[in-house]
Image 1 (spheres, helix red, strand yellow):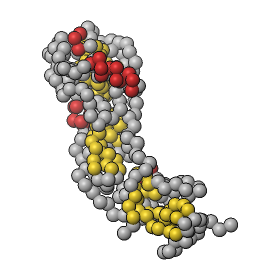
Image 2 (tube, rainbow, N blue to C red; image 1 turned 90 degrees about the vertical axis):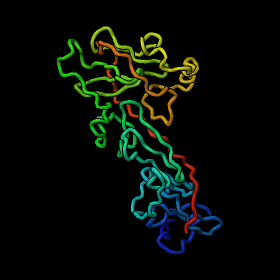
Image 3 (cartoon, rainbow, N blue to C red; image 1 turned 45 degrees about the horizontal axis):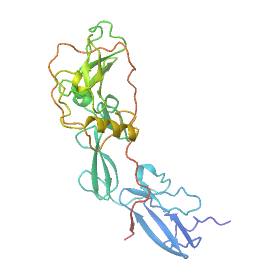
Image 4 (cartoon, rainbow, N blue to C red; image 1 turned 30 degrees about the horizontal axis):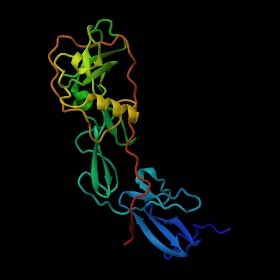
Length: 284
């Protein structure tokens, strides 16, 4: 039986059926649209590729280049870029900050920032611990915070917690000498514990100097909305945050150690999912 793809190398593509969408023989971002037996060459948006995974050739779908197995279809259109977007469609790292990335759609860029302590990994395209991302400079990992030397904190256990010097909501966890930045859930701030190397997230009114951290925000409404949304934690990348800008933490003679509580986990934050129905451009 003749395969529907045998005619793909022809300049004038002959439709194997009255209706369908067929990959181009050499270009990953081009495909043939067949309607009533007539073929039309189409081109995906710049930065997208034609997904030819449908064995029945009935699906018209352009997806991000990194999501498509192009196989032998090696050719793609030259890049067309805008600010923060090397191509009109795609997910791209920020040039200067390793915790920031841009989701580009039709040349319009949306800025996303990984949660505290995480950075955008260019290969995996997810937010990972900053110390595990090669592109992050030393001063960007946990803001340059240095963990206490081994044995400096008595009875510290496997990890210790330390207040952020500039932000009431943030804190550091030191695990085997590596600092990772965390953020308390919206509506709470970090309270330094009684013993060195300890601390927990508490209501702002329980932390001297941080009572007004959230200003006039309705904390009850924020907490209720998070519960309704089923937010599991604070490791998802966010386009915008309802938390206020950083406020100085009051001076304290105590720094933290955690003798109990769960060890930090290397939870990854997923990137925004691409739309499965992007606009299509006719081939020139």
